[in-house]
Amino acid sequence: MSSISVKIPSDIVGIIGEHKNIEKESRILIVTELYREGEISIGRAAELAALPFEDFIVELKYREMKIYSLLDVSEAEDEESKAEKHFK
Image (tube, rainbow, N blue to C red):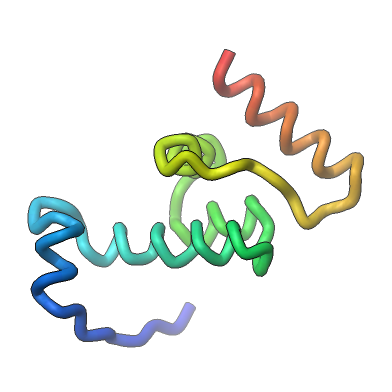
């Protein structure tokens, strides 16, 4: 996977928190937004965030984001079932 460098103003770093891993947090913020906008599936978002599927679900819940899918109905039901099992 290729990468780019981005300059982040110190004000934003201060908001995110200097104690956090800025690269990881930035990656998660970007992929959760892409997922929210419907640009990528939940599985692809977890992959791009470099998180296991279950951990990505936790991130979405932490960020109070709805879980939905760009997949067909049966695949979406499978994703929903996986998420429900994780929180039981």
